[in-house]
Length: 239
Ligand code: GLP
Image (cartoon, rainbow, N blue to C red; front, side, top):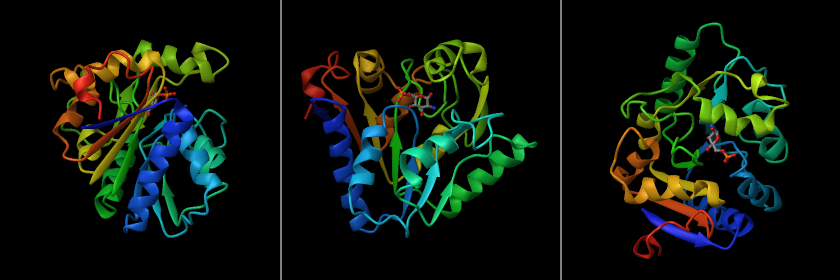
């Protein structure tokens, strides 16, 4: 894994955007996109740029089950607000959290990913090392699936909701198998609360207890951190 340490999330977002822009110029057509507070500065860089996204396809990692697209806490809403309203894509896929048939929706999402192989996948990371909503203990070899969120994740995400009870209890999300098929991956993490997960992801063993550790087995991963998220990392891993 290549590790880039920047001073703060603004610089981290700008650095990630440089990579996206270069890959798009070099022919990348399918972007795997993520939500959460981490990618916000990257999306700000997209919006501030003159990059045209109208020929690109985006495929998002996950969506809460039970939230309508116009619910301000849904990932549909997040993507519209932070990116798609200002930079429309040719086609944007996000799992349908309102589906009546979750299994069929997951299967169809795997098919979408198969038909549009992801050139560049963006990831954040949870404090417990989860990627998308692949929580500790999730098998590495599964595709899109429904996941029951852990207490930790519900607590961490409750800051976006009025109270913890409003946080949905499950989500539809790409599996590690989908993520690992992307040609190139950028993982971003900012803030000291991510420092332990980053250390375990990079320095620890590859284990389903730390879902992000699977990335050690991918040939092209760039990790973009701020100094706080990098603080526990051994210097030898920092480029
Ligand atoms: C959620 C999302 C993840 C995201 C994580 C961290 O669980 N499903 O994709 O990486 O939160 O969020 P944040 O970037 O807000 O710290």
